[in-house]
Each structure stands twice: as C-alpha cells, then as structure tokens.
Image (cartoon, rainbow over all chains, first blue to last red):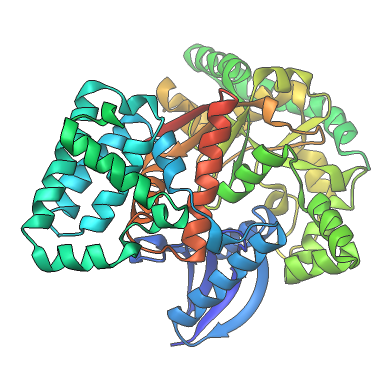
Amino acid sequence: MNINLLAYFDLDGSAIVKIDSDLLLARPPFEKRHIIKINETMLDKAVLRFGFFSTEKMFSDWETLIQFLNAQVAEAHKARGVDLSKVDVSQDIIDLAPPEILDQYLDRIESELIPARRFDHAESVLMAMIKSNNPDLSSKPRRLRVTHLMQALSEARKSDPVKALQSMANESRFPNLTKHGGLLRARDIGKRIRKQQSILAA
Amino acid sequence: MNLFKIAQENAASLEAQLNQIMDKSSPATKLCLADFQNWVLDEAGISINMKAAVLSIFMTTEKHQNIHEWAAEQAELSLRPRQEILEEKLGKYYDRRLAFDNAFEDGTRFRYGALNAGGVGLSLFGDFCMVLNRSFMESLNDAVYLPDDSLVCCFNELHQFDVEAVRRKVCPHTHRHYLVVIKHATVVQQTSREQWGRVILADGNYIEAIFTADIMPDHIAEVRVKKDKYDELFNLAFDDFGRKLDEAETAQVLHFVQILKVTRRRSISLEVLP
C-alpha cells in the first residue's frame, strides 16, 4: 500500500493522506472511526487556515506513518520545552473531571476493568481518586462507591492468585504512582481505607 | 489597499442588495427577514476554531498568533529567514496565502474567524470553538466579513487572487447583519428560529470575519466542544492509567488538561454540545 502524506499538524499528529484517489483525514489514536474522507477544498483549508504543514512524503504502511507523526509531535513539543515522555497528567485528570465523568470512570472500573482482571489499571484510577482534591469526589455516594470498588478489587485479586503474585512482584503496576514515588504512601492509604471502610480515612 | 476601507465603500451596495430582496418579498417574509436581521445583531459573535494544542498554548501563553506572527517567532528562535519558514510550512500553498495577505495594508496582522450564533463552528480541523465575548465585539473597529472563506471566494478557479471579487463581496462590521440576510434570505424563511445558528455556521458553510485586534484569554466568552470529542479525550485519559500512551495521544491529553485548568481558573465556560 502506498500512503502519500500531504499535510500534517505537528502538535497533535493529525494527518491528511492520499491512498489511491481517496483523500483521508486521520487523527490519533488512528482507529478506523478517526479516519474520514475529505475533499481537496478541505485539504486547502487545513493548510491555509488551520496550521497544517504542507508536505509530500510516501509511506508503505500505516505503522511507519504513525511513527513519523509521533516523532513530529515529540519534536514539536521538545521545541516548546516539553518532554512528552515525562508528562504525567493522570492525577490532574481526576482532579479536574466533572461528576458525570467520575461516574463514567467508576462504571468502567466496575463493568470493564475488574471483570477483565485489569486490576492494575483499576487500582491506579481508584488510587488517584482517593488522593484527589476534586470536591465532586467528596460526596458520600461517590466516596462509598470508591470504597466498595476498592474492596471488590481486593477480593477479585485474592481470587486470582497468579495475578496477585505477579502484581506484588512488579512495582510497575502503579506506573503513575511509581513515577512520583507515591507508591508506598498510596499502599498505606489503601490499607487504611480498607480498614476503616471510608475514603475519609485518607 | 486597505481592506477595511474597501468594505466601507461597499456598504451602500449591500444596502441596495438588501432593499432589493425586501422589495421582492411578501409582508410575512419581510417580517421574518427583519426578525432574522435583528437576531443576528443580538446573537452573532465571532468564533475561532482551534485544535486543542493551539487553544491550550494560547490560553497558557496569552499569545494568539496568526501564521505570520508564528513564522516571525520561529525565525527569531531558529535564526532562519521568516520567508523560508513560511515557504516550508505552506509548500505549494505559499503563493495563495501570501497573495491575499500581501494585497492589503496590515494583511500580515489579519486574524480570521467566523460569524457564530451557536454551535461548535468549523470543528473538522479545530475541535475547540473559542467564542469571543460581547465587549470584544463592541470594541472592534477594524473588522470585515466575507460570505465565504476569503481563500475560496476571493480567488478564481486557477487560484489567482481576484480583487474585484473582494470589492463586490466584502462587508464592514456595521453591516454584518445585511450580509447574513443577503446570503441566507431564501433558506432562513424555511428554517425554524432554533436552527438559525446552523444556517449561519456549519462545517463548510460560514461567513468569514477578518480583523486585526489582538486577542487575549480575557476576550473569551466560552469554549465549545462536541460531546463525542470531549468523551474521547476523557476516555484517552482513562486509558493513560492502564497503558503507555504514544506521543500524539499524550499530547492530546496534556493539552486537554491545560484547557480544563485554564477555563476553570479563568471561569470560562466549557460548553459540551451534542
């Protein structure tokens, strides 16, 4: 397959490509629903109005193209003094999330992550909620829900001994906390919550 | 040439065109168009669609740059000529872009937006729609409007700049409601009032605003974003807890967080629209 890159936006990796006779706008994370057909006038506007870089580069597959776009994004941010490999905004997201998003996150932990045994992922989100100063997390029903999900998580972990051993042996199960040395403190908070059944214990 | 002066000179022609439309209309249609005209004056402001990264950088640096100002900054940082940077960015589009901007006094200071009376604007390439506030609108001295994108309606089929098209079409700030009625007189009669915002501005159909005034975050009335984009960004942030995001994904989440922080700190409403 020949992918002709005609324009890209260096700060977010969006790209306009030509495959055969089709002009496509592709946006990260580049899943099928993020790739849409556009016309020539839209390509013109992307460059003339929306700051896309005009270019002409051939790629043999999507993987190589995405690698190129990611490199451009990293480079553009580096030029602005931001090292994307060191960016960690996960706690900020929890601190800033409105109540309906917090509830969606809790729903996903309950209905997707725990049943799929993605315990580390679930635990990272819950720990960020426990540490958060988001006032919407201090409502009683939401506090209780976080506590209950922590308990459910702990029980699910116990019932999956292999996974539990793997996790205990692997500090990277809390990538965001480990990055900032908060892992031990978070474990301590978690223990206290489980003991006192309330996130107010933290 | 002074684009703002040309627009003033075209005011009489716009008035004549509107009168002609009104003269041909039935009493009921006249009423509807007059209502529409007043609604435009009351409700329509200027919006600029931006990518999350651009909005986040504008809000945190308090500096809104057009392409010429961006190139000047890059030239200063890289010690390369400004023209070379612009040519590199615009490629084959360089001549077209410069043909318009260089044709007018202060053309390199032009900022481009769209007349907006509701909705997320031109969201295909700029998910976040920044709506400028009423006091900014009222303070505008130099602003003109065109019935479509200037890089489309002021160029011929060979992409050559057509100054006569500018003279015929450009509208001064004081007459923006005239231009809207002239453009949409037929459609607006068949559209309910609730849909008028979409008549004025939808992807691919808009009235372009051009002005030279500097924009600051204080001028933002609100920021609008489509719900599916807003949810997508929060979902990406959720994924960040469970897997390592790549650079493009990280950048999206980072800029979204900045937008959330600054809108909250400055009490700017972030409207999530269906």
